[in-house]
Image (cartoon, rainbow, N blue to C red; front, side, top):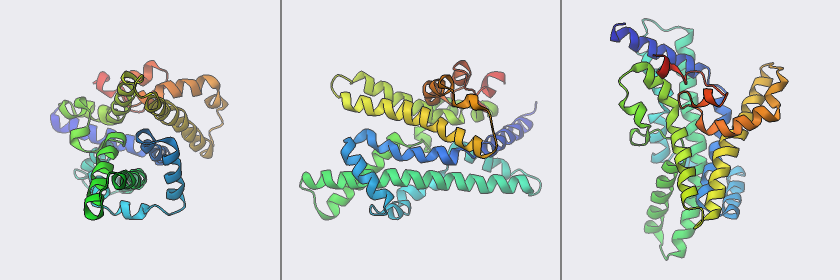
Length: 276
């Protein structure tokens, strides 16, 4: 096929994937648990409670330069689908829906990542004060640490944090296929790194395992199942112990081509790279 046709096909594939990711709006809420990896459980729960009751400056962090930059950068599948809209011959209902959903997903990412940022910001203000920092110096320290750690634990959107396969692939379809892989790579890397240092910091290993497999696997699947039930899906097998156990193990791998299929939990586009 001519490269132009392949690019158009890749754009359509990204559009299909994006329209099929409405449940992601629910799953993105699990992002709020990410900050727990980098602070004591009690400190996290205290700040999470303050966040949920409007006492942690959530709206301020959403309007911060860091989060606004993140919203503009957008998750990779959103960027690819939005790019394809630029080649559309004329607007229609599909392009309108894609644009709306793309903006919604980017906004949801900013909303929940902003919550993580707010929790980390408050924690590091406390830590900085204990170090003797004050005023502008304390504020700069807290914002710098919160931004650095949010980049570490949140869904990667900056090019520097993206998957190597996504960045280096010259095949447009493979690019779409690998668009979900960066977060999987990131969370698995966090888990294995914490496993490597488990003897020195067993608490961090336990929290990272919880975030990776329970939040990223089991809880995400439960939210997806609830969404399916809301749409009228009456397949009771989705609540079986076997299915939920598989989701717990396969969830963190979701988005890596073939990995989810091997685990029996395939994604919409996760085999495109191999088929193309």
